Length: 339
Ligand SMILES: NC(=O)c1ccc[n+]([C@@H]2O[C@H](COP(=O)([O-])OP(=O)(O)OC[C@H]3O[C@@H](n4cnc5c(N)ncnc54)[C@H](OP(=O)(O)O)[C@@H]3O)[C@@H](O)[C@H]2O)c1
Picture 1 (cartoon, rainbow, N blue to C red):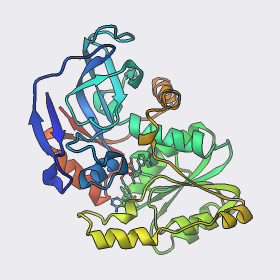
Picture 2 (spheres, rainbow, N blue to C red):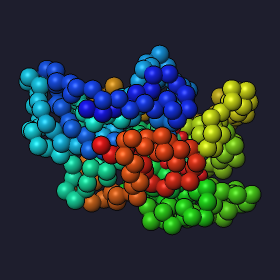
Picture 3 (tube, helix red, strand yellow):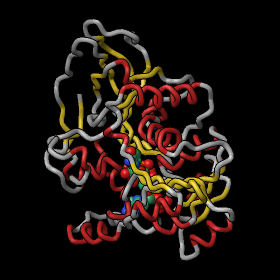
Picture 4 (cartoon, rainbow, N blue to C red):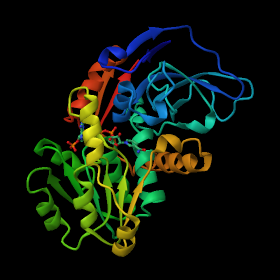
């Protein structure tokens, strides 16, 4: 099998491709020969060494998701047969051509979806599902603001918000991304620029019920001020702390960290607004939560209620190029590695 190993956090050269004998599935495990693995912005942060949940785990294979074919079953494994086409999630280890997985972390691939489409589903859709359903409790008719709306999580939020009956305003970093945000369900799209908040006010004149923000620095405070009574600011990333397209310098990280706004409980109470945060990587171990999210995603994909996002594929040998692309901030949809 082939897999990417990060022995020590670092630049792109830290993504080392290794070849090893295939492992055998243990009791209850299903072995999957992966054809594709999803790439997420979090993997960049893992490679850089700043991802909280990865601390102390190096050498580490990054990656949270994959799709492929079941090729062996461990003793007592049930639910799948050799030859089944499946997709699944994992807490790290995704950039590998062989996966050993518990059946609960796998689902059958929906008809009409290929390996790359399916490897692109679990992480962003589980994140979006958790954000909308478990954290924000988004209700039909609510008006939601989605930042980075043409990206992986962004397009997933737009699609699921529409399924839930919400209206969405998407924010994108460039004009070139507006068509994608519209295609995936944004009712209005705003390009980030000097008039960002004026345009958001025009698109949502009565304010916002919930905001989904992985920028993490400059947009939090102005967003909070536009929440209606009972509004929720859901924070799930801090991409703005990292410079675009290059490795950060430590003092720069520290300065950006200091710029993250702080919200006092007194202020939240008086304003009747909430600031909420989560990281699904810590939640995949909560079996019932993971099951609810993964079941919803697999069902919606199977029923044709989720559209396939644009996927850009890189052979695993070019994992560094996939990271470069994500760091540029110019990608739309999802990136996958192929084996
Ligand atoms: N907490 C969780 O559980 C969780 C789970 C999954 C993902 N996330 C976070 O969600 C965000 C989106 O993840 P994704 O994998 O779907 O990525 P993505 O949205 O496909 O790509 C990242 C996007 O973020 C924007 N961005 C803002 N600052 C950036 C920077 N300094 N460098 C590069 N891009 C920057 C860019 O879009 P625009 O310029 O169009 O805004 C870029 O296209 C990431 O911050 C990730 O860490 C959190």
